[in-house]
Every structure is written in structure tokens, then in C-alpha cells.
Length: 293
Image (cartoon, rainbow, N blue to C red; front, side, top):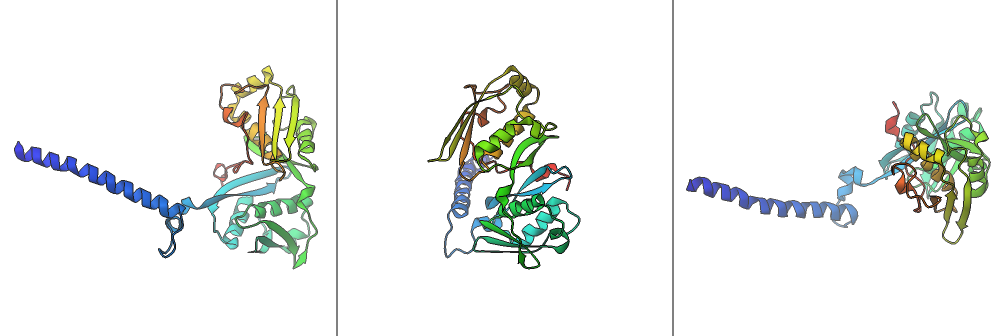
């Protein structure tokens, strides 16, 4: 009895020590992962890559001219060659689009393959430029073919995001301001086969503050909107995410607030976190893991 009791007591006394040691180890991991420490070799994030990741998005157009964005996480210091291989895999293109890419001082020099550049539409060029622009370390993209610069500006195309088959997809429009993009979004004749806000939802107020880049939109709250949010909450959330992505595509818009006559929820509350609070550009539109690639 006494021996058994002493053994049990010894086991119990070990647990405080284990907890203390575990807490210290966790603290060290967090400390070295977040705060770089010189003289100690590689930081913890170098062998725990999930602590040092960022999102990139590959844009490609289907046969109908609709833009499909596919987002995925990559290690922040990924090299251009690895990202190029990932681009070709994600885009699912049978022929090589990019012959070579290099990044220096934030500028990505993208040399397109001859077979692609000879037949590439403006939308196809936009898709390549916008995809590479999301790579870590890239601030500007220059396109070329056989070393000759291609005269192309991405500002000619603005994607207006709707929902189709559970995916957020973009319809290319010409819009130089956020208000023009919103007008195009609300013009359902632009994309009648896609899902957006119900037809009877009206824009009540448009308020943009250029000083801080905050855009506030107030829409009418209708029974049709409520029914849609209750019946298809996932689609409703994707519609709101697409609208947020549309407005925050413009660099002058830092965040957008969506309001529907003061309602804190549209249906049963699944989208409440997207309402009445500033929303920045979504980091993920369509997760690459949803695709069989």
C-alpha cells in the first residue's frame, strides 16, 4: 500500500514539471518564429514553413470569357521557377504560357512563349499579369515576347465578381472607378446566367471617403434577399465575398462596408461577419483544394 502510494505521488509530481517545460518550449517556438534572432542560425519558421506562408491567386479565363480565380498558400520566399511551375499546374493549360520569368527589385519580367503570345487575347494577357502580380515580392509586372515588351495595361479590364456553380467568377468590364464597377455589378444584364444580389435589392447609399479609402454601401433589405440567404447561405456568402472583391480591386479602396438597412444578418446569421464592418480584399476567392488538379 505504502509503496503504491509513493509511486502514485511521484507520477503526480512529474506533471507540473512537464507543464512548465512544455510552456517554455512553446514560448521559444513562438519567440523565434515571430522575432528574427541574429547569430542563432535559421529561425523556427525555416523548418516550420506553415508559419511563413502567403496567398497567391492564379486567374484564368474559360471558353466563355469568364475569369476564374484560384487561390492557394505558398511559402513566402518561394522562387519564381517554383511559382511558375505552380502557375502552369493551376491554370491547367496544355501549352506553356510563360517561357521565362525573373523578379528583381519588385519587378517581374515575364517572357511569354511564342505560341501563346501570338494568339493571346487582352483578357489572356491580363490573366497572366494579374496572376504574377500576386506572387510574393512582386510589385509590378512587365510582359514581353521574345524579349520585345508587350504594350499592355491591366487597367483596361476590371473583374466584376459573381457566383457560378458554387465558384466566385469574374466578368471583365471596363470601369475606371469603383462606382462604375458597382453600376456594372448591379446591371444584371451583364451576366444574366450568374448569381448576384436579388433583382429587387436597390442601392440606397454610396459613400466613399478618399482620405482613408473606406467605401460604405447601403442596400435595401427585401424579403427575396432574406429568402435567398436562408435557402442558400453558402451562395449568399460567396455573393457578398464577390461584391467585396469587386470593390476592393481598386487600389484607392482600402476596405468596403456592406449594410442592408441596418440589419445585422440577412438570413440566419451565417454571413453576419461580412456586414456592417470594414472588409478588405479577400485573400482567398476559390480555394485550390476544391479543384481536382
